[in-house]
Length: 214
Ligand code: PRP
Image (cartoon, rainbow, N blue to C red):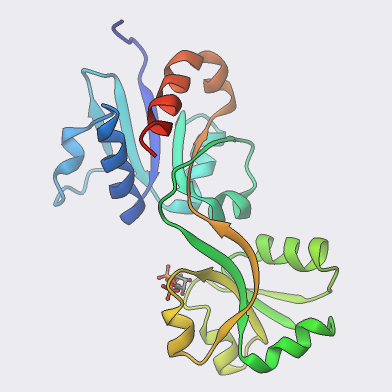
């Protein structure tokens, strides 16, 4: 059947978007325009299949999907947890695997064990707050940073950090270690709640096709 309405995808810019298009290609969701690596364009169209793709900053992907500017998004579980938007999370895509952890110098282990009032630096203040307040019942002071969070304990800004650990090399090279694991992370597909009602067949077919390739 020839589709009349565009299905719009929001993808987190960078490595995740490349991996996603590789996977989508296997199920026939393609976009030739996106293959031009020198292009500075932000929106790409496949007229034939009535698909549109746009690249956004990761943390903005759930926002576009919640408001319906995109029907579907692909983003890390870390962003989904941090942004806490009203969207459906429908599929674990299995790539972009890493862990959200509490990290710091070995000496900070005692501070965690004794539930002391500590300072926690993170790019993910909501995840940090949920973990310490709701799961550990520990009152902490959370300091929001925008990157290179490992600096926090090194320069004395914070006792520990809540951050993503993939290979662990950033921690090792800076004399820090994983102290507690919060949760595993990976890329997820998310869907706008209204789109799911309006285009159930198209979206469910995509989920089924993707699942068979994972
Ligand atoms: C992420 C994360 C860690 C690092 C973990 O940072 O915040 O710093 O990767 O990876 P590893 O365990 O393989 O060393 P990113 O590169 O996204 O930059 P940022 O610090 O500016 O957020």
